[in-house]
Image: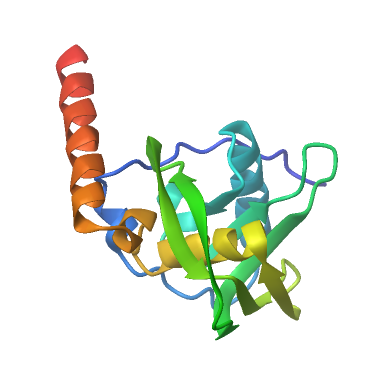
Length: 176
């Protein structure tokens, strides 16, 4: 009997788990599949187009993404994803992050990537992603490696965003 997905709190900057390298998943279990479902529900509720396990305080190499249009879901669940090829061509897209709310920046990344991963049944899969999906999968895999989108922008822009985050953190601490 399937268990209903539950929403999970999303970890925000400057929580140190966001800077740790996540551990590979050694075996896909019912618990892994439940986590994938919980992460999917959390991503949709946020709302976002991608979520990595470290963002819900779980240091495992698991991501979920849906870069489809509202009426055309394209949900992808990946366990132990690995980029195995990248294009020479690059693209610039505006990125944001559920763990760094209300902050965006243009990030340059390879325009196309090939990713190998396990699906929720432990079957090896690979996809070639381009455009928004390519940026999203690179962004989420970065999370598994302790890298944030702000690490791909100029120091000046990164420092501005970090100052805003620290100011908001101080203000919310004073309110509580």
